[in-house]
Length: 79
Image (tube, rainbow, N blue to C red; front, side, top):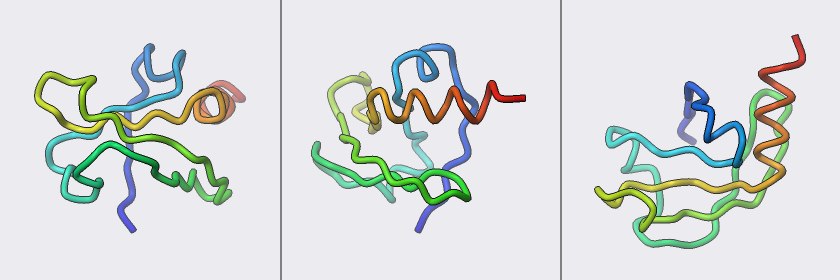
C-alpha cells in the first residue's frame, strides 16, 4: 500500500482534496472512480473519488470531501 506524504496547500485544506504527483501516479487507478483512503496512523477510512479531468496533465486529483477536509484540519491545526 503506497504512503502519500503531502504538503497541504490552502486549497487542499479548504476543499478536501489533494493532487497526486507524477512519480506516484502508478499507484492510482487509471480511470476516474471511487477510491478508499486510509488516513494516518488512526486508520480512519474515507471514501473518495479519483478525478482525472481537474488537472491539465490528467494526473489524479483525489477528492475526499468534507471528511478529508476535516481530517486535514484536525491533524494540522490541533497543536
